[in-house]
Image 1 (spheres, rainbow, N blue to C red):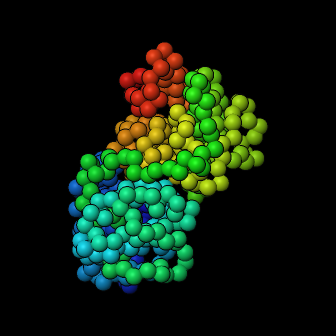
Image 2: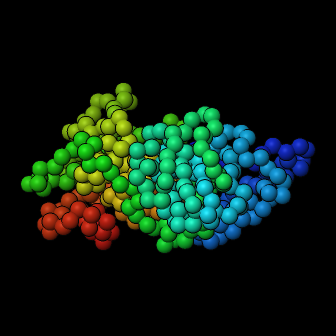
Image 3: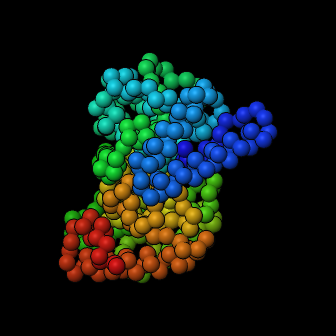
Length: 348
């Protein structure tokens, strides 16, 4: 249905008015599905998927035509006892979010092979349920399989429940790749910052300079992505913890107390590692983030939302107050970091 890169569209059909009517009908289905997912009504979302799948089968719709991120791969074949190829055709964050279903898939499948973005390969090969990983490329996968499926179709294919979805962590790190080593005597709160999302959706990005008040809370700030000319001059102190490789980034953020990020791959990486993460969301955000300040997808995540389009200045004070209150509480009680940052009552 819908992905982080944009919504899927129906395949072209012959006949102007018929094509328009079918497109409108598809939009209605798409909107219904997105509404169900936003409400975390997964049973209703899977039922909508079921109807859409039946239509595709009836129309004999092609599987491997058009842009990859718009392709619907699975045709309802039984997964039990099969050699399953999981194709990762969407964004890095989508892969990280939906690879959680590899473990329940492997409980019924004979083998699970994941054809994954090369940047994620070292992380995905460590995921429970994954037998083999292959680097994604523009050709065909060099592997024998019985059934193929796109990674974002796994939740539907497995009829995932909220209990299944809330399982975290499901990623693990290689501690040898960590770039940040804490002194055991260091009582400071260390926070990693990600402020820039992909250029395909600039609404998700925030001007880094707007985050300057976070430096006044007593926390120590670390940049997790490189500065650009648009980020300068930087008006507050921070350390550079950028990592060129995602596995090294995963190991590095595991040593921080909190990650503050916009809606991008980092939110999914931190959430899948069950690290404390606060995610800033634009006003008309993606379906996966629901409408509350928490999400079943990532139990250690808190969400901070714009109330109006482009209104980041109203989000930063909320974030700053929450961080200041948490730093104060941490200083007073010396609570374990995960307990502090996951406790909503401290900042309510």
